[in-house]
Amino acid sequence: MQKLNIQLLLTGNELMIGDIVDSNSAMIAQKLLSLGLIIKRKVTIADDIELLINEIKSISKQADILIINGGLGPTVDDLTAQALADSCHLPLEEHPKAVEHLNKWSTLRGRVLDHTNLKQAILPESSNIIANKLGSAVGFHVNFQQCDIYCTPGVPNELEVMMEEEIIPLIQTNVTTTDNYQVLRFHTFGIGESDLQKLIRDKFQQWPQEIELGFRASSNFLELKLTIKNSKYKKVLQHYEKEISYLLGNHILSKLLNPPPTMAKYVIDLLIKSQKKITVAESCTGGLIASMLTSISGSSTVFEAGYVTYSNKMKHQMIDVSTKALDKFGAVSKEVVLEMAQGALLKSAANYTIAVSGIAGPNGGTETKPVGSVWIAWGTSSNIKTVYLCIRGSRNQFQIAVANRALDLIRRDLLQSDEVPFYLSNNLSKR
Image (cartoon, rainbow, N blue to C red; front, side, top):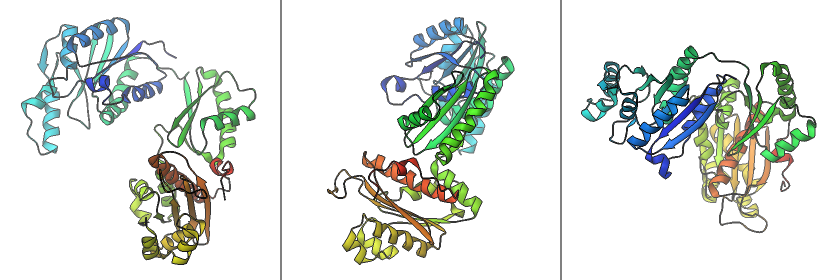
């Protein structure tokens, strides 16, 4: 690991009062980690010119690299350029490349470049422009007190592209990086942190000290990280990569990808590869599964129709669920969800189907069908399977969990996997 002192300075009143949550520093840290570089210190301050000047002067005396995030916009509270110029005792000037960028940005949007936006081209003298492919504000780079200072926009998607395509290559040309530090990521679904930790502890009673384990939960997903800090342990890492892959099987969605795809993306890619189509019949999720699928580019080739049948009347009218099944078993039942799946397949002529019917809450539950109850049906016309789950949480959490589990079950079918997912094998309420 190279011993560079890298620091972040984030600026914005919105950050200080909680209007927005800082996700940018985490993303910057991940991008730098790809070079084997770790941030030593992070400071967040309000849009205050004196505070900015004091921090820039102080940090640049200590750090090899300073990344300033935010304060590059056209408004009066965007102070980064002014603060950096004052800190470095440089005059501000209109930068021709920044003006050219703003003209192109405005023309593409059918706008005329005005005086307000032109403020974003007023930069410290001799600044090196950092291209911004998505936004109006260019970034810029100066060296002050032997510290490389990179100024970046606060808009997350603009910053991410700038980091990947501009700043990381710049840093690579200025510092010697190392491959000693290596992180292996497993993107998993369907197993919680404590359960996964127990599985690993039971399987590997002597976990090697050379490999650091890390867990990061995100909604229904879990990232498992294996980290080594010296390249001489690569073979040990490779060995345990195979062991973890075998242990978790199809609970692993992907490795190395950061950020990982959505569950819908995994399903769409498998459907495209197999040249199969899918349909959905949704009650308790209200169209969420269809929305997840159609948010993916290319989904139109594998998804033609979905059915949101919230009432019993619409279940009968739209996808031919029998009134007999609805009256006898109720909407949240194995019999009804089977008929929903079959009806959607017949109406759409798709190859695969998902059907869900449940009680999202907070009201509507009974002793035999509590809030959180859901029946899921999935598969093909020749093999539709069903399962009952009881998923606790808020209405929104319930809907997201049901959608992701239903998509995961289809993913496993497309992989022709016989493995029972942990959330089913561990499902004590299964009927």
